[in-house]
Length: 174
Image (cartoon, rainbow, N blue to C red; front, side, top):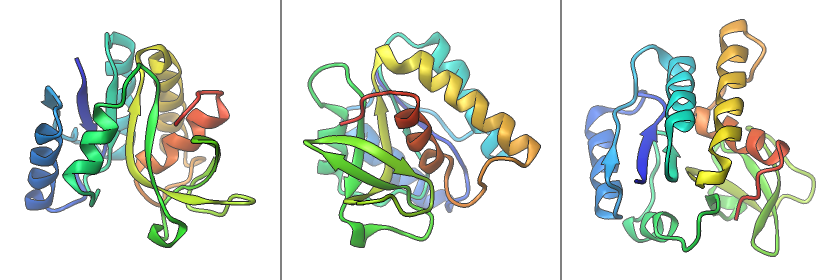
């Protein structure tokens, strides 16, 4: 089962409902509401889902703006690998994770900052394959602890923090 997990509830309810509708239209079986308690709570919730997961998880912020067709492509990507929605450098926001891609793979990512030789920007939606769920759980727990301790970056959405963590942990992200 693939389900979507928005990590924050910072976006207006109408926008979050629209995104949930788009994700369902793209073929997701379930879209969970963002948990109360802020980003750290969302990351802890995500870690628990990843540990119990039996299929890919789609992780996103509630402020994602993407065409339903782009979400459909990400959700229905063949295989069980991990995939990020990446756009042009010009699509970056001040808090977007910057990425460098090589032959269709994200080979470097940094939260809210430049990557040497950056070729794109993470657009806030990540599908994590079943094999990568244990690493997702570890990364989410580490980020939640860092947010609680004040040692993790706080700018942007937690999804923008997760992608760099996953790439640095060795997860192959297309």
